[in-house]
Image 1 (cartoon, helix red, strand yellow):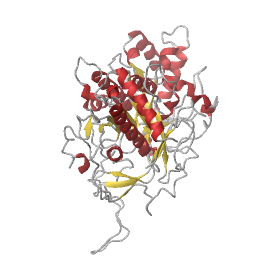
Image 2 (cartoon, one colour):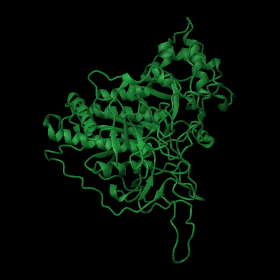
Image 3 (cartoon, helix red, strand yellow):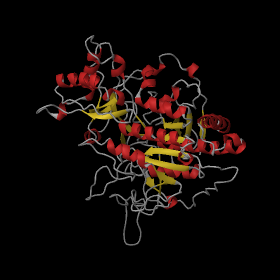
Image 4 (cartoon, one colour):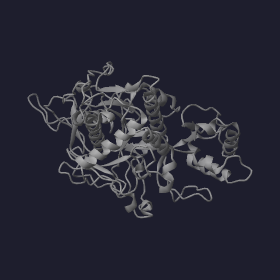
Length: 531
């Protein structure tokens, strides 16, 4: 295992460097787009409101816009929005606000209109045009906060990540079988590392890593024998019910939804039982943390479908629920210090359509800034497109530090087992950490078995079954797995910092202490894992 933390040198990023590589064509399999009601934005054909920048390629949900809570609660603004909706042949939206900062609003055709003709990007351009009219109550600042609901993609190699035109560079060396698979079962003859005991001077509280991913599956390392058994109380792995409920509330009719925390197939195919590209992804990540930082705990939130796609609105909902959980933990009057979350690990992301200097005000940037203000360390995979184009939220590593807040996002690229950079990893000055992300062995749901068969089998012997994971372990590649390596290193550093300075002990969760501890842990990682 290799980990290298790189000190931020924003003064060395050349002006305009963020705009390189904007012409690459984004390709996403059509079946994935159809399943999630998605579309790829083509800058050459896209409608663009006058005075607004021409977009770059991105993937988004074509019938959904993200509209901030305060705008939805303003009857006058909603009326102005509905004027644009009516002129676009769409039904009016409801003026119904909730506690989320931005919620997905479904766009529906009025009358007998065809739902397939609805395009949230086109509607957004018309809202922008209306905002520039003197007679419209929708001001430009408000419309700038209305956005697409991006499709976010897992950061594993070969499958699950959209490729730019320069991205298909890994067809050979990272495939491990004649069937073209990069994820294959293996056997591991090791017991899980000792967890240590809480209550000692060195471990006053276990650091908690929130993993927003594909959910969890059964595995003996986590005390989960099957899908009928919830994670054990006070165990290594737990789930955040409030976040799963917020995601359920995001459900859009006709679009796949996430109902619970169990990693499950995107489509139920009872005939051949094929395995989705990203099933087991969250379990694999939890196992990495269990190996590298055994004294930590994992808080799992299912935000990603097993086909490797997450809806941006679901990720936002989960991040805000984590922030609220931290806020409760940091309120001494509530006595809920055990709800503290120290690190968020994100092995997914998207390619944004807007210019680089606008990224600091997106919905994702807003909630990430809130988490860093609370002292939560946010770690994100840099993506696998083999490009320098920024992948968000990882590229928020470039965001200027906020006074009194913790460190900005740690953006993680992938290394080979020999500590060289992988050919698939994104790279650039915005990548601030590197960790092993190829040839990684970790836990995998024990009940996953697909239709592929060994190359040879008779009554006495057979070849390797490439998709029978009953062993509970697999080998896999991607910056998806480099990110939890870095998150685990930070968790270990939090423990060490607290052990060396009782004033920064993990039992102390007041905001000032949490921020100082986060900075001290990152500094320790710079020293222990220097690039």
